Amino acid sequence: MPPLTRWFVKTSFLYLGLALITGLLMEFHSVLKLTMPGGFFPVYIHLFVLGWLTQLIFGVVFWMFPKYSAEKPRGSETLGWWTYILLNAGLLLHAVAEPINSIQPNPFSGWTLVLSAIIQFLAGLLFVANSWGRVKEK
Image (cartoon, rainbow, N blue to C red; front, side, top):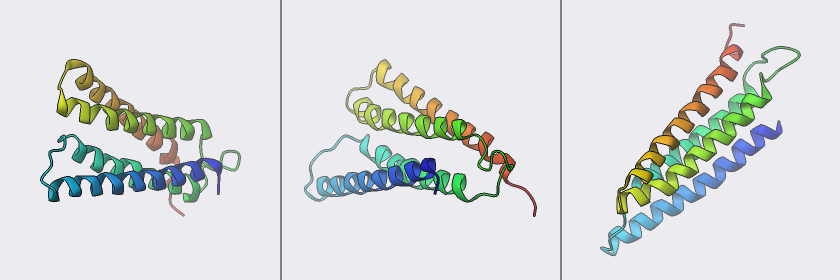
């Protein structure tokens, strides 16, 4: 298994744990009738979908898709690492800014959410650019 795949997969497991803990905390607050900032549900969804599922898929695709070429079997490893960095930077930025924005909306936290979405979008584009050539007929 390539190092980049290991990083994607292990990081996805960390996000799965964080998502489960976030969900558990939301349920405790719900059962105990305590107030919790509304920004945690979007964080919970992002941790599950982008942190766990998407990251796991990206790692497995980088590893298992057909070879790009004999010289570069997995495409550009540099693009793969940039995908990993941007996806995680955007996700962490979102996880911090969303609860802040729900408690005390302000232009800074609002624009931080926009920036996090742009960073995650760029990660997706890099993933597609790096993987597109590996999808081919037999």
